[in-house]
Image (cartoon, rainbow, N blue to C red; front, top):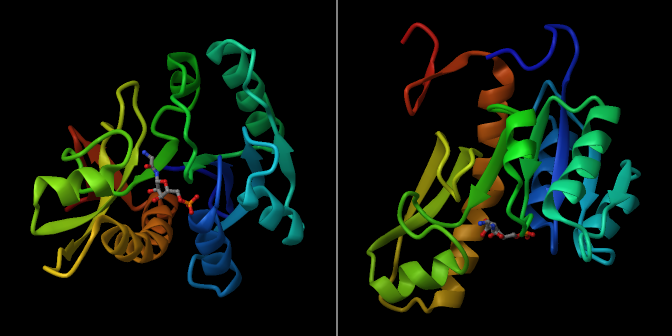
Length: 210
Ligand code: GAR
């Protein structure tokens, strides 16, 4: 899949609602030269005082806040999509964006929206995935970067990272260790998608000609 012309960087649009640690990890990977060939075009939040958006301002990145309260999902998403188009975004990265996307938004960016989820999907979709996994008693937990489709936490999987659950863990310590993996795996997944060297076959995201 080609996201941008060969000579120009792939432009990311980051959507977040809160802390923004995944966004910060992506920004740091780019700054440190670990994530090449991409740039952050805009950071968008639906929460006015999201810490992630403050950090984006500090980094001097273009920032936009769209408050969703009182607006129909479709209208809110239309505004966000227009902003992404204005900033010529090639790839949308959800980074703790705690909103469901309208079908119209998903259709506007086919296989161009990534999400990170703190479980080994398809196990434990939805909210509080780490708590769900801990209470279920799994011995391996982890995180997933996947394309977003019209179903919740369902699209094609780009990359996953598994970690063992320790006897001494509680849901909080498990979530912390999963988050550390998220910070590494999201940039790796973006690099794969941006590389143009992969394609989607059925539900499988695989290297071309493999
Ligand atoms: C992360 O753990 C991310 O996987 C999760 O929200 C957290 C956001 O943290 N996302 C979901 O659960 C989406 N279903 P951050 O704001 O520090 O990146």
